[in-house]
Structures are given as C-alpha cells and as structure tokens.
Length: 519
Image (cartoon, rainbow, N blue to C red; front, top):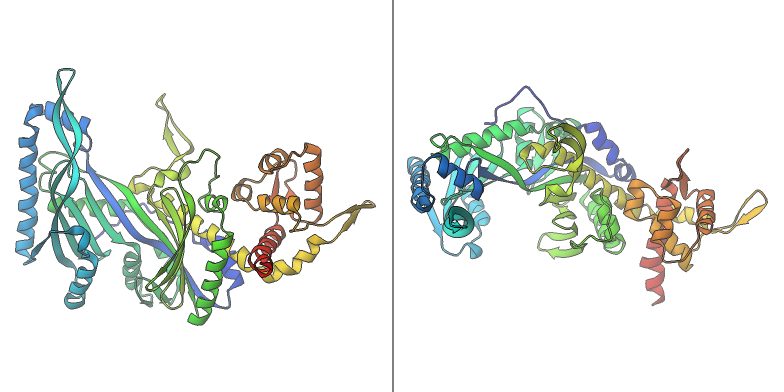
C-alpha cells in the first residue's frame, strides 16, 4: 500500500474546467460529466551504482574486483534473482510458465482469463518467463587499459503480474542479467477507482472507463492529487522484495517515466448523441488538422528544420475507430470508448519534448529557474499531468471550433461584405480568392494561436512578395472586420474568437462541402 506523506502535489481543478470550457459549453446539455486522469503508465528503473558502463567500472575498481572477472561477478546476482523469484512463487503456490515465442503469446489476454476465474483479490496472479534481449556489459581493453563497455545479450526475463490493493493490476518485468533494468506498469484509472471507493463516491466502470460518477468535481480533485513520493516509496518496497542484493551492494533504483497516457473522457448522456458527434468530429479532423495544428496541441512551433514525422492516422478497429495525430515520439488521439464516451488521450514516449519552467543547475553551480526540457524522473508526473491535460484541452478547443459551424456560417456574411471607415471602403474577405484564402489559412496556424504574430511574421509565412505597407493594409482590414485584434502598446496581433470561428467554418465549408460538390 502506498505510504502517504505530508507534502502534497495537486492539480488545479478550476483550470481544468476553464480549459475544457469551449467544448463543454457547446455540448453542456448533452454531457453528463468529464474526468481526466493518467491511463497506461510504464516506469523504468536502473540501479544507482550499475546503471551505465562507467558506473559499473567504478564499482568494480572500488571493491577490488578485476575488470575481466566481470562475468563471474554478474553471474552470482543472476542466480540470486532467480532463486528469490522462484522462492516467492513456491511460497504462494504460483506456477511459473515459460513462453517460448513471446511475439505470438498474448500475456494480457491470458491474464484476463485467469482473472475471470481467480477474481481481483490482491496478490500474485501469474509469473511468466521468456528469453529476451537485454542490456549488458562486457570487459575489454582500450589504450591497453581494462574497461567495461555496453552491449546487449539474451537472458531470462520474469513478468510478474499481480493485483495491488491501490493500483489494481500491475506487472513487473525483471531481467536476470546485469545491469538489471526493470519495468513497472500500472493503470491510472484503477488508481482513481481505488480513491473513489475509499471516498465513498459512487461510480460505474466499463472497459477501463468511468461511465458514471456521482460527483465528478470531487473525482477530478482525487485524480489530480497524484503523489510521486508515494509512488517512489511503493516502487522501492516492491522491488526490494524481488531483487535481493540491493542492501548488500548499498544501492537503490532510479525511476524514470518511459511511457504515459493521459486521458480526458467526455461522458455523454446518450449513446446515439455520442456516436453522432464523434463521427462528425472524426470526419472533420481528418480533413482539417494540419501539421502546424498538431504542434499547437503540444504547445510547440513547427520549425522549418524539424526532422521528426508529423501527421495524422485514422484506423478502423474491432471495437470502433481512432484518429491519431503524432509529432515525433508523442501523439494525441481521439476514439470512442464504450457506448457513450469520447476519449481524448495524449501519449508521451519522450517527456523531454515538453519545455517547462523549472529549476536548472548552471555550469557555475548556481540554481536558476528557467524554461528547460522536462526531466524523465517520476517526480515530473505533476508537470507531465498538467502538460498532457493542456494538450487534451487544446485539442478539444480545436474540435469545438470545427463543430461550431452554425455560428461560423452566420458570421461569414459579416466578413465577406464591404465596410466603410472614414469615408473609405474596405472589401470583405473571399475564401475563394487565392490571397485572401492563404492569409486566413496562415492566421489559423498553430504557432500564431499560441504566440501571436507581427507584420514581418505574416510576410514570412505568405508565399507572396508583399511589402510591409501592403501587409499593414491587410492587417487593417482584418482588424476592421474583427478577425484579429492588436495588443495595446505592442505590434503583436491575435485571432479573435470570431476570427477563429469564421475562418474555421469558412475553410471547412469550402473544402468539405462546396469543392467536393463541384467535382
């Protein structure tokens, strides 16, 4: 059971409601509630004194062990791990099953079959072994001096599946060969379920999702109260149970985030409405989400030199469909979960892609606060949760603008007709005029939505040789028609709410309805 500490890390629930406001407001009469929490989480652990080749070499030298005796040194710990795991399984009458073809064997499916018979009482469910590739070291000579180098090898891996009172179904993956980098998995929905039960809040679940919660506000507060310190203590307790040599070698595991999924579930009152809205959102997302929009979801700019893949994929699955927008190793997806839930889920495989305001140790030894890449440590869960929730919210905000076509179409007349100011006529914007269309499309780009834009930025993005004065006249028209606004005391401009709705509706109406009907 996780130990509770006095220091709490929490998310601001009020901010969550605000960020989801555009989408929630539009469908408020159709939505029963929303809940955001971590879903699938994978954490990796490496030994403090043996985590990399240089550390292993230092350990051997400090303990008067010859470098070329490393294989003998490592083998004794291999045997200790196997003896400890097999001893625990024997005590609890758990059979260890060896998997000869790991790629063909579905562990999750078999575990579910066992749970259907066994039930969900805390304790070990099943232990599998398989021969797999692992990280390794080997002794060598470099400049006529003995060194330890990194390598790969094959060894027995233990997959220990168990039910934890707090976290539900978890598994621990333990390789038996040094440096013995382990993996731990749990599901955030199960953690929240435990909290709801302890708090006396009624709920119903289907397929790893909440279809009903009696108090969504309180449930969100419980979800946001995610303590990394408690998780760290729990991980140390469980790993000490299976790795016997931690105390004798005076070391512990350093835990980092390998993969995490953060889900925002929109629970609708009616499955028919949920299906109708979802199908409409998917259709429009496929045609409307551009690479620069995807960058916006992750609070980034799509730089000209960005080399990783950015795009959208749509998949039909057995239980429904899914649209996935990816940028490098990270992605955000939308899919129908159950009968009346639309899930927005940010998947993070590289937490370093997020830039956050944190303490940084400079070369001079001083600690300063500035924007830097997020650390992979499990103590980044607080910041990671906030960033993932913002990503989900930006995507929902984008979806809200796509689906708000009724108001957008009504406002198209406002920006397409002429206007007079100081006895001067200004023409409206024509979505079928090449220059006007390109201007409006550029204004909707992700980086401008986050950071705003200036005259020169607009000139750089447009594929026309326009002077500064020509762009100034364009900006004047945009301000006059209330498509953009200027920040007082600066030369920076932002899209207005009207501008977002009108441009989004105009482009969608043109590309998805008018043009297809003409072909």
